[in-house]
Image (cartoon, rainbow, N blue to C red; front, side, top):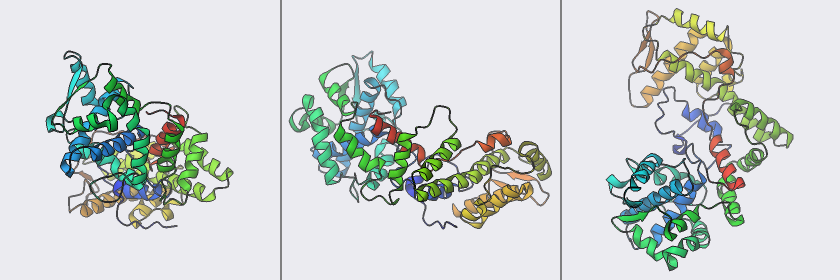
Length: 424
């Protein structure tokens, strides 16, 4: 089967990834039939809870314009971050470094921190784009938690869930209908006390564990199973069942874990799920070695092609046995199929040239930039983007290498949090 790609899924983007080979559209296309709603960064259940509660509080607050509601949300995100750090010892949230530093500094000022949407008080360099609004809204919208369109608003079901589940916890210390909280979030600056007190503890209760049955059912439907508009033909729900029953063991290689999931899917009589997981494994058998080799080549400026090929044969042998032959048919675009064929055949000179050609194509598609890697007429490598020196892995390391996520770690983390009842 040949996969034809269209527009890149914006939810797949890994922030900061250089991706000189344009691998992202490839693994994203393989991952989306398995996991339709989550992104590479939406792995934190408490992040979704913060988003939902914050959007609802901003809507209930006094601000009538989009800018005012966004500012209120940013203040709530800060408040939630400080509480998650101080009370729950959470570590995996956006802005944790600034939160930790300012919380430590607050110990000398009576435990109080200043919350504000002003740039100098934000917990990220640009909290709107780099925080939950910028990173979690698309996934929440795909999960039918946020309504279509802008500005971001909860769906009626999500709003009713927040009203019934989280606002009563906040109201215990922030007043009826949490008016004191919504008023505080709309202020230019809020002084928030990190020492034990009823208001801090009410915010902490939003992230309390274990989850209630209503919470677990709600997040299972919307996040774990892909939401009411799931586009994976129930593969995500069934994959979550497998993940729930077979947790990845500490230190277990991801490729070995994937092989177990494939076997489990076949045992359950889910051939379509097993096939999609198999395709991801086939894809990764090419993308992983191609990516690490390309990174290595970026540290070999002016090396002769013969020298590079000798080094490759020394490390990888005559060919990599771990590369799946069917990848030469399964992968999209002729250049990726050429890379796969060169790997399968052990044609290392063709492989290096194919990687350089792929990079040149990616640079043209990004606006005409010069390639990072070229093979000159004299068969020498010309490197324009120098990377840190990267050792070439041995063949046994390549066999066990898994480089790209296919959105699987996000689903695994969400399943663990929802089914285990713990926020990571």
